[in-house]
Image (tube, rainbow, N blue to C red; front, side, top):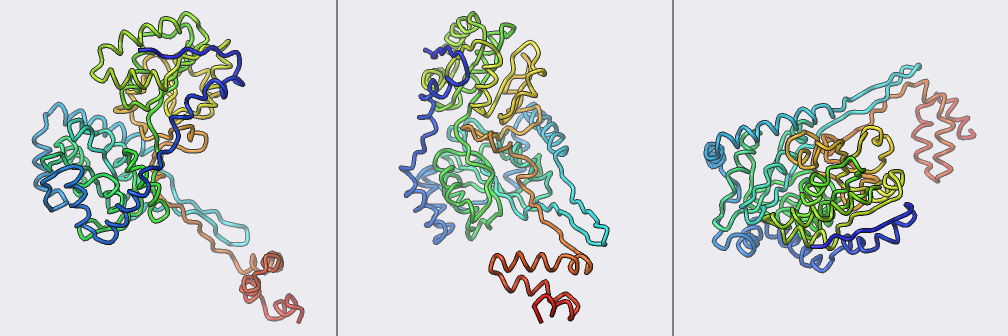
Length: 443
């Protein structure tokens, strides 16, 4: 296994030196027509299309019903070990505490003339959550369910529907069902892939449509979400996972290597970067990566990701390292430095920041509390983590006084006529006393 080492004098060299990374975010549009066909089939044929696609891709002998019964959900909750139930509950409590702190309140302001302006915060009526199968259901993505469902619950969404692909025998991994049971979620469907996104968008006989869809997925699911955006809300268009670690001479190379590999094992397209101002750390880190990768169950995936999309970048100083990190705008940013808090104010673009030698990204993935659904591919320049706000709408409130209309009617009408909207102008002038309205109209 090899991981490239780059030496840069300043941040201006980064765009040229990082050209190889552009291949990672090149969109694969080869399946778009196929996904469009799936969306259309579900829209027209409903449950029949869902059953057909599920038999074709997930479970050859699949048979309705699509929805998991309450009895099966409860049975799964009793089936998993007490240890796992306690661990899921502990993670859920931490995630809920964090997201409750995100809650926004409706607010109002009163003008001196008696008018009232404000903003009303309202949750969506229905949220659809997609939970990937995870290697045929053998690696249940419990954390994905928790990270998507708890913000929706905290926001106050009255209806939460979960779609997840069945295993080859038609069942759902009991850990997914148990997690849903612990959260009090009872609407779960045995359906995955692009056709699940279509079902949640358009609705079928068994699955009523939702207002917003959240949750990660493969390129087929991601393409479906992109094509359905506008008909339904979505959380984000997420790409492969990524981590960038800023490390100085105080960093433990074994920790840094372990954290890079924790991303690399996700996917052959995952990216793991370390930027350091210490030559010796770079050399030691290369050796650690090779040693640790060899012992991983997913060593081939991790090695390929590091070879294709990983790098150890040596800079002249930490100022340059920080500047490059802001250019990358990574999903996960770790600060493995002597004084990480001193660097934090200078970090402008990152999905999540992990401070110190004992704050690995994996802690955030499962247990700390902040959401692990984060912007990727540099979109942290303008996007944020999935949150309570993802499942809420903001409605402006306007209740102006008669005196406000009288005082500002002329300006409003003039601006309306400037834009060629005569009816707008007249709708304001209609509220004026008759003599003022006539004067405004030149009468």
